[in-house]
Length: 258
Image 1: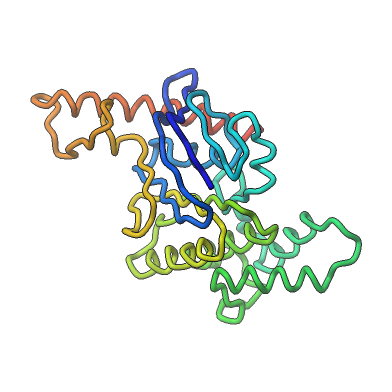
Image 2: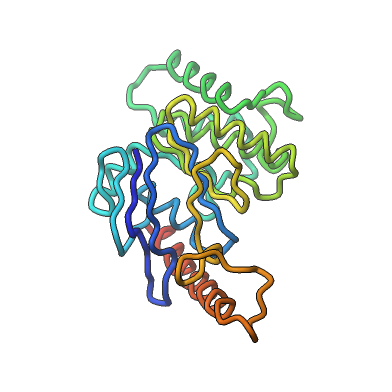
């Protein structure tokens, strides 16, 4: 279960995200929704123990944040996040899978278990190696966007996390591929893993946690067509967005250093 109350992060140049409150049982599909630059990725990183919040509190499967960040990291995993856990374009699908298996291996000989874990992760994400251009020898740079997303999720599922964070779920996806991506994440959530999916547009069946410019300073929805000359709410929203983007840059830099 993930809960948050008044959860926020402020950096040297202002807020990154603030006043986030929600409650979600295990196995929930959570959509962290907002325009790019509004702290949505930083919120996902904070809820998976990779970034330290400065306001309010949260709890992830019984571990309070930010006090138990290492414990939350142990039970969570990330899909590809630029600058943190991105896929290597020059490596093949097989090389990524082999590398991740070796990184998580704790015993000298567990080949059968490794093969079973890989097969289960590929099945859960719908990534069919035979359908790729060069099979498992296909380089990441040659994958379609949805195929790369499936691979990133499969790699994250190998250690069997309780919480899965996915960045930019709907980035550069058409309507059909976007629905296929969310269908994959629904299946992962239905199997018991809580999913935090960062997106611009959330699916109707997800628990939506909005960020940034989707809310005004008072927490109400702003009119995107509002005229700043006649609507003071539009001014506040524009100022808040600029502050969020600057704060997010600082916080993201700290996360990469960590």
